[in-house]
Length: 253
Ligand SMILES: C[S@@+](CC[C@H](N)C(=O)[O-])C[C@H]1O[C@@H](n2cnc3c(N)ncnc32)[C@H](O)[C@@H]1O
Image 1 (spheres, rainbow, N blue to C red):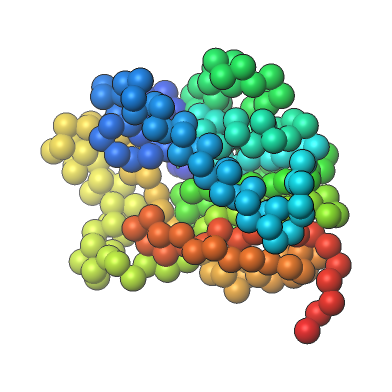
Image 2 (cartoon, rainbow, N blue to C red):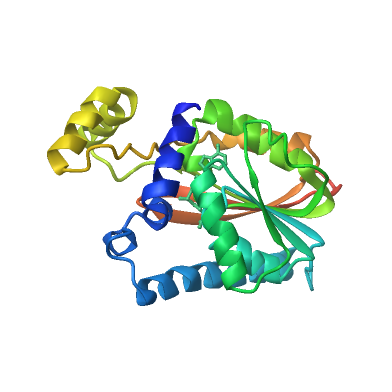
């Protein structure tokens, strides 16, 4: 098991909803019906917005036969995607998250979603997709691996299909001291262990964060036939983009 996998196995087993949204209400000890309702509604609202972007700018009446949700977590976003798709496949690196995703699909009566364990080559995911999607996931994967996964996902998109992939690319909010502290927590594990001990969260690992070089991602899109790209900015603390694109020939300028 690599480092990234063990971090997400920890959260999948101990604190899955907090792993998806790191606010106190999502801690397993605090979770109640109300917090869960807000959590799943946020996925519904997000997918409704994304569909508006897709149908308004790329493909009216978008109804994908096969959709992929990379880094699906507990299926907050996979389930509303499944409702609008022939079938949806959620991929995650954490067995705990996948188990809960299956349970949530059953509880919400969604029968066309399946959940698959991921690896760096997505080797268990087969076939082409009409929609490939990922939200708040790449920021937790070292770009040395993440760029390869990004490319694999773009390769899995069928001609005429739509991609919606989110990455973070800049941090204008943290001070130099905060950046140094985070770097020490992320790259010197002992420092973070001591901090966790002091805070009484003995085994809780750090959720790693990374920024991506948009130039490199744009080159992947251009060289894989995704010639129309729309950018929506995001800001969860640091600056990010949701890249919405279609794989199709288009006139180059
Ligand atoms: C912040 S959560 C987001 C979950 C979901 N996308 C959502 O918005 O509700 C990040 C998820 O990415 C998964 N993840 C992290 N690294 C991964 C990788 N290399 N392959 C697949 N999933 C990964 C984690 O297990 C976790 O479930």
